[in-house]
Amino acid sequence: MSRPAFPALPPGFRFGAATAAYQIEGAHDEDGRGPSIWDTFSHTPGRTLGGATGDTATDHYHRYREDVALLSGLGVDTYRFSIAWSRLLPEGTGPVNAKGLDFYDRLIDELLAAGIAPAVTLYHWDLPQPLEDRGGWRVRDTAEAFAAYATLAAERYGDRVQRWITLNEPYCSAFVGYAEGRHAPGAQEGRGALAAAHHLLVGHGLAVRALRAAGARDVGITLNLDRVHAASDRPDDRAAHRRAETLHNDIWAEPLFAGRYPAYEAETWACLADGPWRGRDDLTVIGAPLDFVGLNYYRPICVTAAPHREPDPEQRTAVDIGVAEVDPYGTRHTTMGWPVVPSALTELLGRLHARYPRLPPIWITENGSAEADTLTSDGQVHDPDRTHYLADHLRAVADAIDSGVDVRGYYLWSLLDNFEWARGYDQRFGLVHVDYDTRTRTPKDSYHWYRDLIVAHRART
Image 1 (cartoon, rainbow, N blue to C red):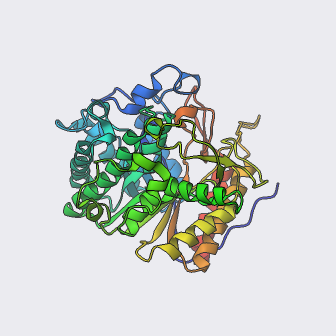
Image 2: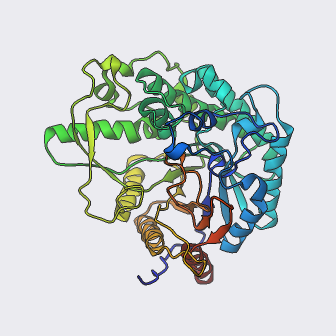
């Protein structure tokens, strides 16, 4: 397979790479870090593939200088990473862990010394376990604790960090974690998951206020909105499509960018949607103006109508909405089982741009592919499928920009192979191969392609 050509992106476009704390840091019980819901979940038998945990992960906590050197070798403009809330505040609130604060000081300073702008995600799914024990995202107190944590982080690092992301993929936190039970905390609920979705957005809004008060000037949120297709034009499939749009997209985008709740939420959740968790001024809090929105994209979904698994809506989970996914795309799939459809990214960006006049500039904050990577006898990793995936999706971004969508930059997922949540260590997304026995890092062919793309872009623009 030949090396793909470099897509043409406009002057000023920025390139980066992304990671998340629990997936790479390790050191789960070192230097005062408290447990998170992912520590609890991964240590519960049967929750993760092969019983894998993030106890050591890629050992970034001890090898961060090596990883910053890899970023420097790539030539990226910026690096998106997350802070482990329980490393700063082991109880989620209360006493501050000085050693945890110091670790991120060292990481940020190392990045700046390499000429790489840090972009901090405050919450990438790893809620401190003591907060979950008190109700987790089901309760408003967690949103308020999140704002206090945001203040702590901004006051400590705001002199060196300009870009702040409040939440990563609240869909996964609320629905994969509290409804499907595939992610921490492993709950399967209806009202609890919908309350979590709302309180995540309230926490976001309160954190935006806290960050602004601390002087932050570049504040946003990262969403994994989906390009949802209907399997047919039949009325039942069109209705299923409306419900899927509500679940995947509208519950987030409508409050954030249009100042309203989703039009079809009663149709989607019936009596589950009328809970008492919404406050009178919550839409104002949630809809605070943002400087950018992050978009994570991997694949589209196509839906068809399906019966509810439970006849009593009070016994349904929040994702049991009479929808089933089908796959009509006829394309290659990554090892995650996801169809590769770059044009759907262009469609998604265009639809967001057309629908929301208040939409801020967009950053692609995650995009990448899991592939069956192996070290060859010469110590290399040849991953042409990933390289073509990246080229095709960056070309899809360029197409959206050409049509008028304001996309400012792209964070590739991921810098490193890492702990892939419930899938353990069997899925490799990294530009850099990690040997999980020795933690040895080996740049893949895709690493060199991405590096050369950045060089060519700068030479051209």
